[in-house]
Amino acid sequence: MREPSPEGLNAVDRRARLFPRSWKDFAIRILFDDDLGGVRCPGCCEVFRTRAELCSLQADHIVPWARGGETTWNNLQLLCGPCNLAKSS
Image (cartoon, rainbow, N blue to C red):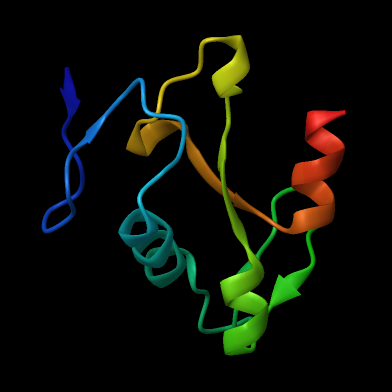
């Protein structure tokens, strides 16, 4: 089954392990806070501002894929590497 995605993004099989790169890029654009000048990691609350910092954010399953979480737009969050790693522990 293909998961509908935000307008203009590729659909993806909800059982796929990884989010498409285009979804991460789109999430960065919609989560970018002009007042903060960046995107806040929901895990540690650090704000990522530069292009390199934004590129380092990782598309993560809110409900972990290993626990049955699907690869859907509503199950996507952007985490920094340390927060994503800590979540996996």
